Length: 109
Length: 148
Image 1 (cartoon, rainbow over the protein chains, first blue to last red):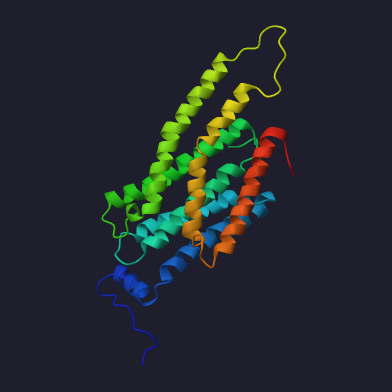
Image 2 (cartoon, each protein chain N blue to C red; image 1 turned 120 degrees about the vertical axis):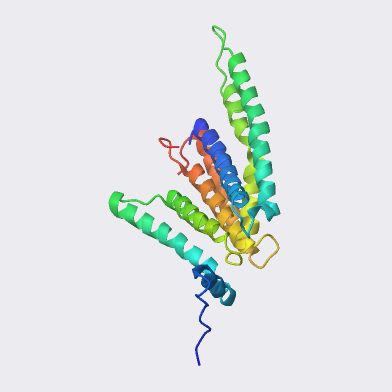
């Protein structure tokens, strides 16, 4: 007896992803959270090693923008991402933009 | 953060927010998408109001600030005022975008922190309080220097 029903791959990889999301609805939000934190932590840690400090507002803006682009691609297939998840991602971009533009130092915009 | 930087930062944030939502709406209309961000009333309202604030209120305020700057004069042997009118009117142009900032904070509150009145409201309250303090410190820094 299988632990779970294997997705149907004969109709294409996107159908398999839709099958996964239908079975586990948290899949797409968790994938976006993963992308966000990979860019945020990876980028800020690399910058800290290179320059001695990490520009968290900039990396949060870049991480949310990366997540936003992946989330937009997800909207093309039916049932992969919900409207609520997409609107939360866009709100995250707006929030990190607010942080970024109010955080700049005297010598930079 | 000086006055120029505060004005540019605030205006750039509004442009950035409008661009992001407009890009999402444009992407939805260009492609056959199943999840359309235009169906989200809150973000659509935010986009429309931010455009109005930036295109109408901010432009009017900047024009009146520029006119005040042009009209201002210091006569010979006149005492210089402590805070010039130009300074005040320039800062006033930032406050034309205040409702956009408020709307952005409300949208963030509702979308990410669950909105007021929920069980999660204490997080929202703390977050907004910290945000208000930071904005207050930025304003103080603008006028009086680094608060530290």
